[in-house]
Image 1 (tube, helix red, strand yellow):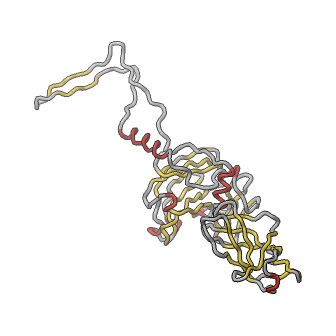
Image 2 (cartoon, rainbow, N blue to C red; image 1 turned 135 degrees about the vertical axis):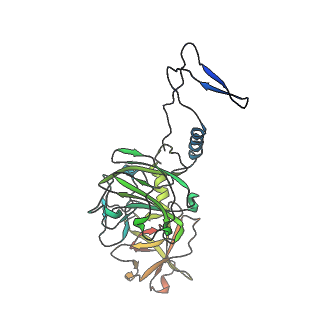
Image 3 (tube, rainbow, N blue to C red; image 1 turned 135 degrees about the horizontal axis):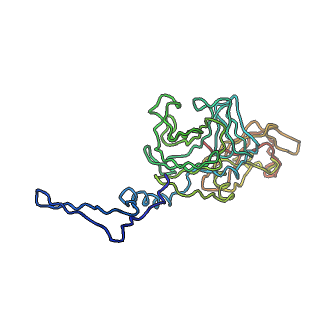
Length: 331
């Protein structure tokens, strides 16, 4: 919520303040201010003090969202727009998912859909409750600039399992243009989603959410900092999909990848459509699959082990590998 910034002083007349003292039946006296003020001022009470204290406390809380500066969004997947008519949801710009039949256009940072009824159009981000020090019932304040207007509502984290369907989960914020829903995962209270559900075409410039009931200013992270955070969850390999690997005794055929930052968890491996291949002395050899090997989340490296049949006499020789597109450690 925005704090009051137009406080006024009480201005008494030149003769000063006047008070009326009345004797009470119990022997006490009551004092009444009967001044005819030239300007009636504002009071400063406990509610005001509490809001300022919450603002001070809230100022230490960072933006809990990642990749929230949409005109300068991290978009490792590289598409100009995203949509799906077959899957329940897909990732679009980094860390954000859109629901079936929703279209997200990167250049105009807009959400559209054939229908907006019953939250049919939606975009959300998932995070871990513990990582953000959140619990069910906590206050979270959102600052979102959408369709040319800033909104700063405060809402509570809702337990998704209290409702039989997602469409029945109460919106934390509801206006003419969109809803915001903040709730835990269904049957998993260790994670939560913050979702934006448009009621019409919606352009979102930025969004911030922070723990507490006071909105602090939105300050975008640097592109480098935002990219590093996103790459903990998804890392796109851009070196023309060519890497080198070696057959190592006791391990198998290993392709090492040094990632920019340690990934959040053991990632899944995504492949290019042409398939996974190794250029051996005899020519191209297809791998049947691949898996991570000896993952350590504290190290900025992912070792990929190819399931492939190669002659043992080429052990230790570096060979070209193609077909590995990206790593995903997102939810």
